[in-house]
Image (tube, helix red, strand yellow):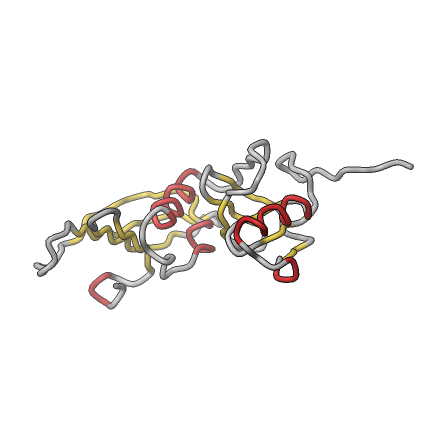
Length: 174
């Protein structure tokens, strides 16, 4: 009997993607091990046969079906770098913050090829004691089209908030 292993473009074994409540895995065996850690019932493990790993950092992973997951559970040898450095930086800014996710969506951030210009916007006086920085970003997307994004940074006691939007901060982004 012969066994064939399919490798995707990153050199990772292309077996699909398994998701538990908190982790991601490339094999059923690893998925069941991680499910025991986060108490995911085996029947609740989600599987996608066609999802391919596009980009991986130490903390997060971007998939071909436009899903952003944790990178915890992925083999370190699977380290494709399919997104631009600018996209990686913008995604990491939001992922590492206390924000739930960007208003503009992870998929738009993944399409950023480069940041062409960053302009700091005026920040209105606030009762908050934390530093707030508002920026307008002129970016180029992968298809060559320009786009304008707005990023707001706000300090917090033990972390920070970072939000990226297609709307100006004074138009209800926060």
